[in-house]
Amino acid sequence: MESAVPLMAMVVQQLAQVGSMVAAKVAMSSGMTPFTFTFYSSAFSTLILIPLSFLLHRSALPPLWPTFLYGFFLLGLMGFLMQVVGILGLQYSSPLLSTAILQLIPGFTFILAVILRMENFDYKSLNTVAKSVGTLVSIIGALVATLYKGPQVFGNHLNSILTAPSHFLLNQSSAWVIGGLLMMITSLIASVFIISQAFVLKKYPTELIVMLFYSSCTTILCAAFSLITERDLNAWSLSPQRRLKALIYSGFFGNVFQVSIGSWCVRKRGPLFVVMFHPIGIVIAMAASIFLGETIHIGSLLGSIIILLGFYSVIWGKAKEWKMGENNGWKSLESNSNNVPLLQNKVDDLSMIQNH
Image (cartoon, rainbow, N blue to C red; front, side):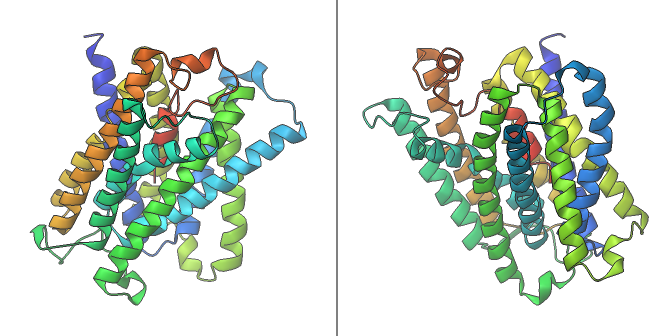
């Protein structure tokens, strides 16, 4: 039973993640905008994190040095862009496409880590080849899912609660392509966020406090942009009731719940165990889409399969490095302070990134 608890916890986490996407889609379909939804959701998360972080880490509060403030603001800015662009992409596309394309995050993180010389690129190494090929395959899969819809497999176009109002007067095909491209941009921003957060956590390894400052900065930035851009008071309204329910669900299960479970499972079973569960979100998103009557096309299924193959190739390469104890692997970084971990203890960050 003890060994089964992490398995059940990760399945529940993936259910919560897909549920957060569905909740955001429902709120968007009722007239909310990405700015107002992100503001309310981040504000609710901040209200939850304030007592939790002060209760659990009262003695670990950071000094308000400019270095910390700059780091927290940078994370908040990237989190703001990541969530707003991600929700906008979700509004144009679907939870299934969004969940699938977010699996690009490990591949993009690998590319950025190589560019920033955080990882060695040895073209003769099987691990490097696996990660490089996996990244390329994942990108191809994302392009297939975005640019090719194909015939309908499940669902219909009628009475879907996940259909946003007119997709800003774009036809369905154009909206789908824009949504997929926006989710690819979100994955790239998320990769930059992961690497930046690795620097911050290296200096200040208290994740709840970092999350609190991150949520606070995101809330402030969303409030400022919303007040400037949102002239329609209906976008700020918490009625109908499904808006409020979607915001509460997203604020709690999207941030606090997912990250807490992810962190606990990382400590219990390690980062590789947690990473391997993320593609389950695609299966859950597909089941949720079918249940809610959303249209699923062959392009989404084919692209998701290709992305999963690339995802597991990247993770396989990282797992081999971990076992071999190479300098750019997960464990070796504990003794090498000149490098930044690519995926070590970052699985909870992937969960936080995918919350919307």
